[in-house]
Image (cartoon, rainbow, N blue to C red):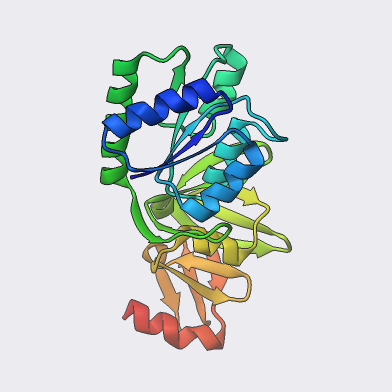
Length: 241
């Protein structure tokens, strides 16, 4: 387990390092600077971040957690903070943390929460590759940013993806979610062999295809009629047949 402590109070950093060493955690890094935290996330590839909210530097702990979620990095977030107001908690909650622990820390409560977080990581995260801006993670959901909201989308629910300039539209049943992300970046996030590009501007979930009109060279997903390029027709037939 690789742990990154992002905390600008040296006393708390020292206390956490002692606790984690007692718990047989040997891979530890720490920083109190938000910009340094981004560098360490890329360099160290932590499994878990113990994250304060108010930090040195230009960015907050919540912004660090948002970065982790927007890039679908397989990192568990545990907030350790003095911020007890409802507004801050609600902002932090939108980053899908594992826990939100307020200071002062209760030693036994922290150790138990941390142990459960380690078990959660073991049960839920599977690694393939890990990159700064192009992570490929084997999991059953992605988290995307729509306006100022982080939204969780189950990969199996996605019917198709359409490209519209700098945006992608994700169709889930009859709901359409529009995000500012290139198709390549989105497909890298999804990282599933169940999705296939059928023309220059559309990717479909193969399992959602209801019929394939070979003569007209179109597939149907619900009420959506999707043309297939000649280049991709034979590939799609091989997959479906």
